[in-house]
Length: 233
Image 1 (cartoon, rainbow, N blue to C red):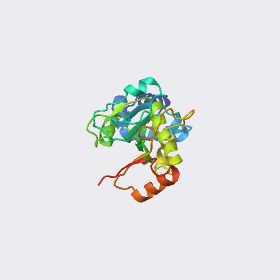
Image 2: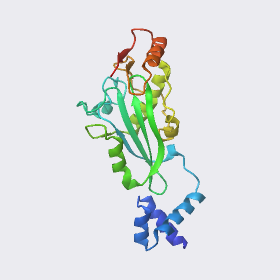
Image 3: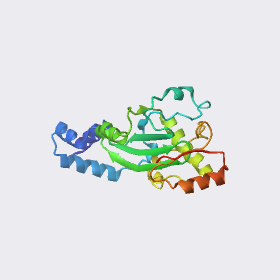
Image 4: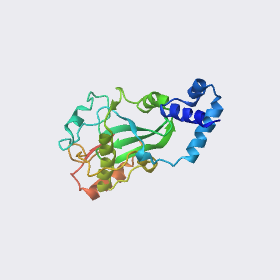
């Protein structure tokens, strides 16, 4: 394959075309396109996940209930659909970044903004650009309403701020958080969001939470009477 074909493949891939579509457009076999892309990736300097351009940040509805947003950008308060379709105190967040040849790198974070921080995460993985809509539909399928598009800065403030809030209470993020952490980047300062339910830790148990351990940790960190609790059957 000559250099002009390789350059054409790279250009089309950067526009988000999958290998099969590139092959059809250039009159090549899909295997030839895949081989050219693999060779280009092997000879190119790797780009860190947090340097990849962000193409989508989606969040479940109801994420803002109980949070203090007075010190945050004013437009953040309008980026919610508080209609009962969400889960109080929980926010599912999906981040997608575009890789060198047009496909995407995605990661998801189930974030307890009242108490436990990142309760679950799926480590970053690659998907084709045209798979994002289907991928997002699957990720948010438990919610009645559609996910909401938010700025990356808000996603950062929620995820990293909730992790720090939880650490101060004595809780570490889910082990899979480290495998997804690279897509979040870093905050330039503290999160402008006040976490907890109106500023107070509030534990709402999930099916895999050790209730007695969580309560003991809260008693040790903030003291009896200084946190709320909702135990679900």
